[in-house]
Image (cartoon, rainbow, N blue to C red; front, side, top):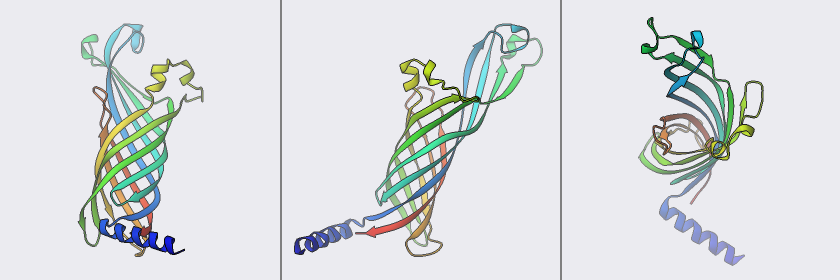
Length: 218
């Protein structure tokens, strides 16, 4: 018993020196993503004539994460899926004598990921609320890729293509802590921006609202 009390005293004293505060909570998030690709088709437009153009994909992703925060480090595990999306096809102007043709279709793939988050934190301001800068890694481990009818599309992919459905992101951003009810509960709006290491990778944005509870302060 004495050894246990001595250990707690040492941990408490060392924690106070570093100002470590442990908290945990949940984090719903919204992540819009938009990117464009140059394409060549055979029959996407009238007449079945070959041509060139661009396709712009716009996706709205929703996610939820359980996290643990230790003042200088944010660790989380969660789930993210595509809520909805569109694909806008536009023919190159040189392919037609008239104005370029455009077609807009719903995004017909339903994708989901297991998300793993590790972000370093640095508090920039503390007063009525606190402002914290964050930077680190987010790994989206793909769980499924299906079409609108529920067919599993990963069964027809090569191993390389299937592995490419998972992505490692480098992200950074800012958060602010509020305690509207006082005490140990807090709300933390969070905004992140990031991209993968792939060439011509699009920028991704995350908007989230963490709801947490302070478990201990060392």
